[in-house]
Length: 269
Image 1 (cartoon, one colour):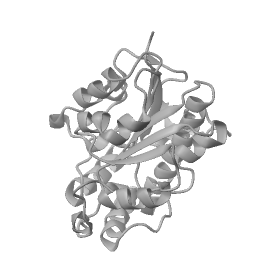
Image 2 (tube, one colour):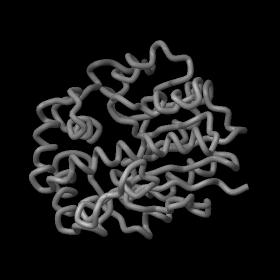
Image 3 (cartoon, one colour):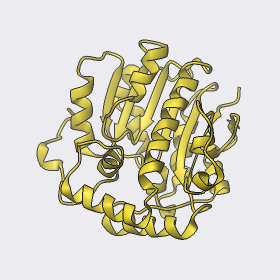
Image 4 (cartoon, helix red, strand yellow):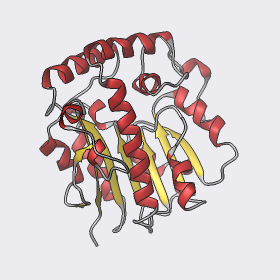
């Protein structure tokens, strides 16, 4: 456990995005306040559960690409959420056992569950930290113990950047993380957008703004800018079901309900 952390730090009186996401995926590690907030989102946007599942499937395909074709052997996953089936380290181990994974999340409940899950693994660590503190994540002893920054690293920011408001400088936060990684590294991310089902997405975001962390929906161009000058890998920044699908792609009607983009870029050099 993190030094200074105690059970009293866990706040179950307010919903948390990680626990709401766990509810969308059918998990049980959430509280009544999380379920009520999630149900409000689903009343506004019934496709929310499908989006969460499509995003989870994207994450797993992304990890398979990174560890398989790209040959990455160390990953930093920020905003990991409640552990569930098909975690990053589990998917990675199917291809390359021993792939090193550092998870970081700002929810103490995620920290508790992840510690219980990872106690028997020598190739994973969990850091209690916020994306808004990139230096803390990068310099944390657990990160430095596992990640060799002289070798390529995959940085995952999956469904987290839309919880960083514009006035919190999300571009600067991502740049600080990108700049710490050597050539050959990768950045994979997904992000909610207002390019599709604009009114529905806006109502769902408003529920988050009222109940928990503020949600900022961004356009394709705004999201693509997080990659900086890195080389975006085919098929580019696309709706998550279209990113290297392992089955038939969804039809136009279903795609319009998938208001979330995903993609990955490689550090040139």
